[in-house]
Image (cartoon, helix red, strand yellow):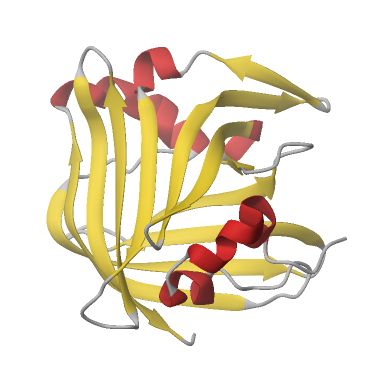
Length: 205
């Protein structure tokens, strides 16, 4: 099993083209139980009004943030585990007047696919993501949804309802310990289904 960080495995030589703050918070060694935390605020958490129809499914699989707001405090925990090589995420949103909302997932290397990872939520639902380094930023582009069942990866047509995802984490040139991020889920006919964006500081724990 490779001791190379998961994102570095996916990027290969392009890893060196990421900004320093991006490399630092993805530099955890698989099978190591290492942990990194970043903290900041989401300037905007938005979803289209009709997206409420998708929320029951989102809550079931743990894939969608059900609330909206501005200047929402957030912390994101990245963890490796000693018993598997995956990268685990726990995004904790602190919406005013509500209990903290956890958006949990984990990321795996895509079998036999260089430049690609798969992010899984509950019940084996996953999104294939192409990974690239662009002007110092780490960029993930949606390549379709799958359902992992009994060792199979079954394509799912969820993009017909959810649209296509784009995620980036970009170094903040004003501070070497800060970066910005944005996530956009855009439907070709209905426009932005979900989006959020914010600024984070890399901490040691």
